[in-house]
Amino acid sequence: MSKSNDIALLGLSLTKGVGPVTIKNLISLCGSAEAVFATPVGKLKKAPGVGEKVAHLIKHSEGIKQAEQELSWCESQGVDLVSYLDPGYPHLLKYIHHAPLFLFRKGAIELNAQPNIAIVGTRKASSYGKALTEQFATFFAERNINVVSGLAYGIDIIAHKAVLKAGGKTTCVLGHGLDFIYPGTHSAKAQEMLERGGWLSEYLTGTQPDAPHFPARNRIVAGMCRAVVVIEAAESGGALITARQAFDSNREVFAIPGRIGDPVSAGCNKLISEQVARLVSSPEEVLEELDIQWNNTENQAPKEPPIPLNKEEALVLNVLQQGEALVDQLHLKTGLQSSRLNSLLLAMEFKDLIEQMPGKKFRMK
Image: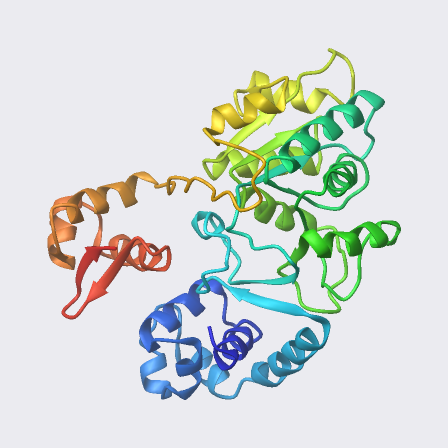
């Protein structure tokens, strides 16, 4: 996507009263983020969720100026903005609920060039948990898998360090802007990651690491990965949030069992007993379950994962497998209400599953 479109997309997100769903509706109507700002108020009002007030807010938005300042800083610091329309955006992340419109990325990592697997867990890792984290992270690193975590104390930073020691790829997803690192004690390791990995965040510069940002950050960790491996976890906390978000997004979740009564194993045991996670005892089991064929070749291409579909998307695709169809035909054949169908078709367009042709006709891509 062009720099002007990046500025426009970021500017829309900084406009009061305009959220991610509205932005996607506006882009669908106008053709691009840049075109939205050049579109008359009368046409903007036709987009779902946009009334007279929001249309005028867009036309008089200060968001463009803020976006220009943000992207100027990004250019000076080697930070890229990767929008959901860019090929470099994590393709699996597109399919989760509330996927971010864009990510700020710094480092050498290409997010779709290899399988991504998350390793998460407690901040109070035991010596047993530390040893297992190093074992799993090293195994994945040696097989050209990008290990994703959150740079937090405990299991997260142990995983990042083990990957760096093995010369592999590792990415941290942060709950704040990329103009600093939190916790500060991990800054040196974070700098090392830029050579063979990277940093990701959905937050603007200056955004502080406030508590609500971390559960939101965890949906990105879960959504961009083929699987989440929970090494040790308490009965509540960030690791369990990540695991449940992964499960809800149709990702594989793996957990290592621990002793009954051990607080740092209670979360893993709970995930296994509730059938949210599969019990594993080795990293080989994880790759076998994911059907990832590995070797030590740096340029090994990952096996493309299947696109997770919900039941309504599957209904639409079953119809379109038979050929192009008008929206009225899709309404009759799927039995979906018109309002729900229109919303679903828009979402499927953004997921690159279907494309719209003139005359409200649709086909598979």
